[in-house]
Amino acid sequence: MSASSLVSETIWKEIESTRTLNDDQLWTLHFLFGKNFEGATRIVDQRGVSKISAHPSGRFIFQVTGESRRKDQYLCFAENFCACYSFFYDVVNRGEQLCCKHQLAARLAASLGSYVEVKVSDEELAVVLSKI
Image 1 (cartoon, rainbow, N blue to C red):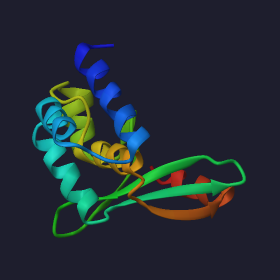
Image 2: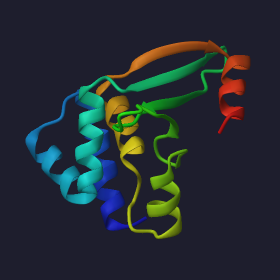
Image 3: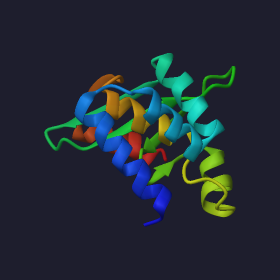
């Protein structure tokens, strides 16, 4: 794990424990993630993150609304995957970013508890996941 990953994990845990984001945490996350973090904060401020939770398994995935005029929605596992173009191009292919803004928005919303909760059956979640 890189030093930046260790720093960000520590900050995410702090935010999760208090459900608040202070100026030092905000500055550090912006330093680590740059423009992607700026986009993520705008998405969270606009209530653009939904957590799709399945019953009875408890499995979940985030659905994040993009910032384009089309308001595309992307399915994300906050720490591992996003269905957006930027994830594949900037994160996976070029390795220029640690994650995309949709992943950051999902992580920030989850840490702050500021997402829209959508409850579905396990079968309905399977259908959603089959579309990735």
